[in-house]
Length: 285
Image (tube, rainbow, N blue to C red; front, side, top):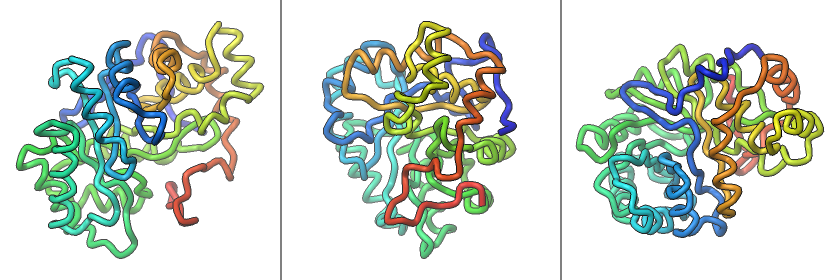
């Protein structure tokens, strides 16, 4: 893996692209039942300002209630949601976006994304619908999730408005160096979901040894590995307030170049975990 790593002092609190400033660690709400209004409010209380949800997660109601309960001014929060694959036709795209805004209790999201591509979709029409939501003020920034390299480049070419971010799976067991490099070339922020590999980082001996050397948890080491890549953010999720705060603290220490290389070496060909209907995209295609 040959992805550029940042020095400790150089890791920002947010990564930027096309005017978007995305906090490097966000609260991911793809965990279903573990996400509540209380956990969202707890994330805000301990300092999170990046909240990620999606129509498909079914957590927009909890996020909306948590934002209200948290009391943080809306302008201080970077809020992401996504339009599901069954709603990619322009009329459906707009309806889904409006439903998300109503459920979230907000007039706009900071980042609106296409959640999953479809082989049969009209990409030009979908990108047009995405851009229209930005032009009408319903999204400050736009992006895509789960696009492979070729599809991402085509989406950037076809979209009437600049894309700001790509969101895909990335953790110590999955090499995403090519996609991270492509995002840099295209001027996009790379957002990592499943950054803790659905808990698989918690029993890895390499991560355990590095964590012990720093007096940190394995989760913090895995998250630090991710955000120590230039232009990369992560959205870990948890239903435990202590773990939520712990994850945010991953931004407060650094790994050495040797430690980064050791963690990168954990990647393996079968490292991908997210594979809907057995048809996961080839990120590096």
